[in-house]
Structures are given as structure tokens and as C-alpha cells.
Image (cartoon, rainbow, N blue to C red; front, side):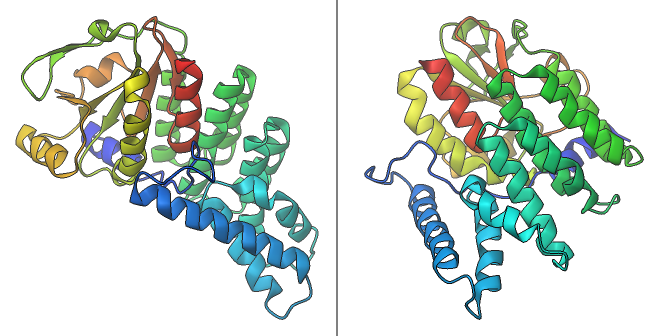
Length: 324
């Protein structure tokens, strides 16, 4: 499989837009449309959970439960729906699609509550609800579990997550290659970040060594990478909220055309630092063991790689931790 094909395919594995104002209290004024929508979705989820609790026998209770499961995943607030999901899983006649949604909520809700053992127990049956030919939803869940394991400082759990995935989807070449690439990136945890020295899009020198003392998010992306683009609103909010406190973002684009990237960055209002990845086999990506995107590396103030492949909620938590 050619590298460019793998990179684009890898980009399509993780879908969905983050929808929770993780660093925003109920009293905080929304600073973007995304944050406003997040607040509305959170409110809707809490009201749905309350409705089901107060009206368990209502004619539309099952529809409401399904809406809770779906909205809990969309907002990444699965912990609010774990009790409901576990109740549904006791039903012997539960619809397979609803069962899969309930397992996903149980798995991710437990992970976000800090119970990785419970999350992994739900992860194995969850993988079996997905078709072997279509493992991508399971890979998205694996990424969140791996991120939570990193935040918790539990490397053994990291191995369990991807070993379990490979045990189920071993015959899917595309998925296994992406997981193996993630595992290669995980081996860089705790190591000094590669000393990349390529000019930025603005023509000025751009070195990671020159950013020592700041928390740096290295983001490999492309203008045709669906999940990369879905994460853009979250990255804008992250930069807006933490740049003045010491966060820098450096994006390395996999695109072939510099002009395309320059126009896109301007049109999408991406104010952080940007550069081209260069050669798809031997560019910056090679130094970071990256063959598929999206891929992120969070570098601490001492220049060491602290976290790998974190996105959305987990990324913000890690940034807050490193900036303290």
C-alpha cells in the first residue's frame, strides 16, 4: 500500500466532532459557536437522563434511552449515561444496535471516570458488535482508551487496548497497520522530541528546539483529512484558551501543495505555526514515526514527548496538566 493512500485512509478512521465544553463552567460565557453548541447539548443530555429517570414506563421511554446513548457519545459525556446503559444491557431481547451503543457508553464512561479495568471489560464485547470488515468505530474507542491510559500513567493498560484490538481485527490489513503505527509512536513517550528544523509557511525558521520552555502540540494533518478538519474548532478553542499561558501548536501538513495549505490556513483562521511535512516517506513524519493521520504529539517544557495521539477532551486535560 502506498504511503499517501495509507495516510488518507488512516485519517478516515476516526470520525465525529467534539461537543463538550470541557474547560468551561456553567457560568463561563461561551467564546465560540462551538462552545455555545456544546453547552446546549450538555443541557439536553442532562434533561434526557432526568426524563428517563422520572418516567421509566413512558410510551417513549425507550426512544428517550436511545437518544441518551447517542447524545452521550456525541458530547463525550458518556459517564452521565453509564447507569442507564448498564440497565439496558441486562435486557435479554435488546436490539443489537442499541446493545452496541450501550456497550460503547459503558466502556467510554468507565474510562472517563478513571476505571480502565471496567472500560476494558466492556471493550472486548463492544468490538464483537462491529463487523470485522468495518473496525473503524472500534479503533476510535481504542484511541480514547489509550489516551486515558496515558493520562492515568498506566502503560500496561495501553498494551491491553491495542493487543485486544489486534486480537479481533488481525485480518484487516489497513486497521492493523494503523494500530502498529500508533504503537510505534507510543514507544516515543518520555523521549526527547526530534529536533525538526524546517522553515515555516511564513518563510521564517521554525525549530522545535526554539520552542523549548513552552508546551508544544505537534499536529500532523492534511486539508483532505476528515477527522483533522473535524478537530479544527477544538484546536482553535485550545489555542485561544492556552496560548497566552504557554501553549504553542505546530502543524505539519501532508498536503502536496504549499499554496493550498497557505490558502486553507488563512481561510480557516488557524493562527498557530505551520510547515510542510515534506517528502511523504522521509519528511518530518519519519522522525515522528508517523505514517497515518491524524497524529499528535504533546511535548513538555523540557522538550520531551509527554503524550501521543490525544484529541479533543483528553488533549485539553493533558495540556492543562503540563501547563500547571
